[in-house]
Image (cartoon, rainbow, N blue to C red; front, side, top):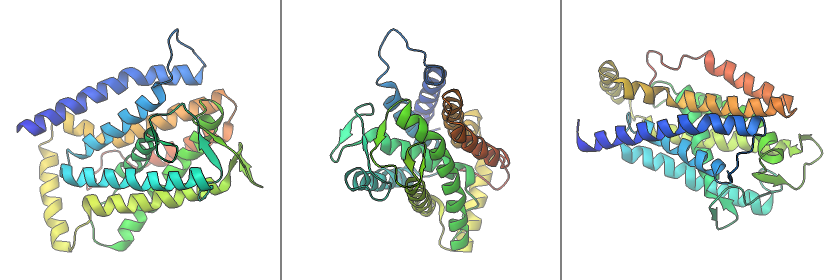
Amino acid sequence: MNRTASYLRILFLALSGLFCFCYPFAVIGVAFDVKPPFSLDWAGSFLLFLEGSILLLAAMFFYAPVRVLCAGACVIILSYLVETLGANTGFPFGLYHYTPVLFPRLPGGVPLAVMFAWVLVVFGSYGIVKRRPSAKRGVIVGTALLGAILATLLDLAIEPVAAHVVFYWKWLDQGALDYYGVPWMNFVAWFVVAFVLLGLVYVVLQRERNAAEVSQREQVVWKNVQQMGKVERLAMLVPGILFLCSLFMFGLVDLTHGYYWGAICALCAVIIILTKPLIARRRIW
């Protein structure tokens, strides 16, 4: 094992352990309104940075770090542009603005933590629904479509909590049809943006140019799978684990605060995920 790989393992395990320590406090605190004697204003942003970073590190076990960083940069930059457009014009999500809860604020009024939330959503759902490397357009579209469905179900669970419980953002115009004060156009936009980002991540990470490259890559990947240690196997599970953790936390908060449709959407996403094995033959990061 070279020094870079060793550092990657140590950092991945350290951040994963930190998440395991912080996550129960976040769930209990938000779901049951438990207030510690010290301020936790930083906790929301910290967890988003932590989760996004863990997913990027996990992907580096199976892809060249340059590819992972390029894919992560694409998600961060494009989501920032879309969020900035939305927060300042109302398109495509609807009229809203971010509160000071999440930080740091970037030009345009969008917190950097939100970009890492997009990394969590995109890389998490991608890691769950990804298929064999393929140059076929239908495979890329199918992967992005199912991932976008999971991302939208997660957003349906997040919105009541983010807007009315932890106050990450505030909706200014709910429109003619709304979901707990959130305009439905937000979820349509979420689906479209998630679909585009998932397709882009697929292309950057694992699209091959022809069938020969696909076959060659599969042989290399699955030879490595057979030689995996415990850390690498944990990295395989991370997308599903973190996505399920987000669904559980927001679904539970929805349930304890009376936003029952949000809890139902979280449950639907969990059912979809659990019908697909988190480790299956011919599936890998």
